[in-house]
Image (cartoon, rainbow, N blue to C red):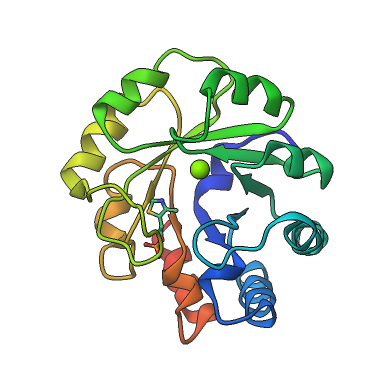
Length: 212
Ligand code: TZP
Ligand code: MG
């Protein structure tokens, strides 16, 4: 699949560790796919995350579902798994090993990289093979135990302005702050809990769609 900026508009991230059970994981994902997310990132990471054959089994089912709904699939930080299940892209943090090697090993899939500070941006500036950057955490997040300090709208704005790649905002994004996030010129927002903890995923996504 060819990378297009429009894929970043409504970027949903989830792993089984973010919800009560595998059944809930697939229920939330299916609703999100049915109601208009533009990309799904499978991020199985942190306390309670699946590994090995269990992770692979869930990822395979995620690939089948995302294909059924024609929504691109990105795998967080697992190049082998991404190739094995024919995902569309891979996403890396800066702590995930040699970034140049990772980019190379990910081809021909598309590549996203997380950036939290100016220093981290400068480290990847000019590299080829990157398709998008994730910038944040913009606000405090409950979904990532080792998250870096929140950079706020002004920090996001500063990094978006200079980014040579389409950018997505991440971290603590809610329906309340989403309008301000989108005004910074990002290509989209990426969320875990805004959707996974929503009492009405259809309504949450309808709200998001009319903003972007
Ligand atoms: N990276 C930075 S913040 C974050 C990740 C994966 C978690 C985002 O989750 P939420 O619930 O949307 O704040
Ligand atoms: Mg990572």
